[in-house]
Image (cartoon, rainbow, N blue to C red; front, side, top):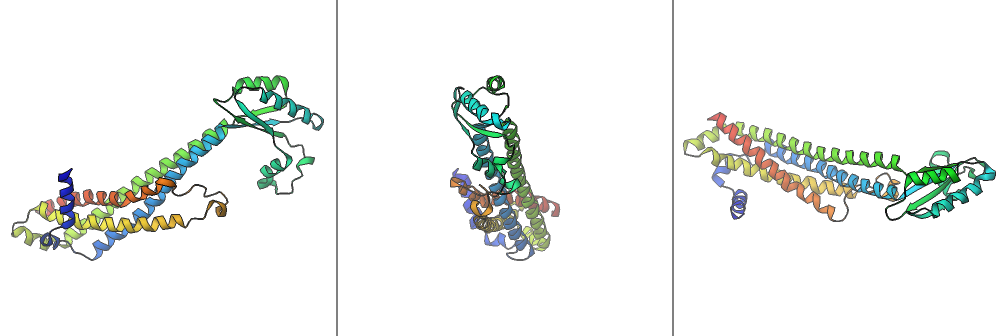
Length: 301
């Protein structure tokens, strides 16, 4: 541990003589800073999407797993009797905490996004919906369906299984896509920094030859490139991360977005995750630059 700390401090301190082989400014410096900042900015959003879809999957699974819906289709003169019979069956079913018929206003609110606010629910042959809230380990769907078929022929039970599983699966795939995006961002960052390091090595071939003539070894020269490009990637990624966090904070709230952006962003201790992006970018730059420098210096020998 102490040896690793010593090497890191040595990397930050640098060597003025070896640093002369790396241009402090120019095209390669701008390319490294801009690519690190852009990739960090995108990584913040990919990380936010990954964490948000994880929360979304948990919320969908929890909400839909504890509720069910009973739909009663019957003639108008039998609707009230079948509804009362269904409620009685549900109240005597183990695992059912509450069974409540939805009011006309609640059913109108459910249909409003499709048919508008003035739908005359009372005059239309709309099935009666009963909300079921489970408790404990829940009820036995097969047994409940058998009882309803015998006592309330017009009742159809929907335990939300066909809705819950596709939604949770879709959220899981979105989360996987976000992590794949983060991996691609890391690979793109490594490729851009490798190109910049190779360009800097080629542009300073004459300086490198002079340093070799006075006894400098390839590892000594490569250390200067690694230090410069690692620090550039760290600074660029820090700037990109700050801009990404500001952009996430600027997203509209749930009320303004109408629920479309519900949960998007960071919550609680998840705000600490973006702080890992600059060190990871510096780590990627360290290994990419070291590999590129040693390979290029070997080819110039």
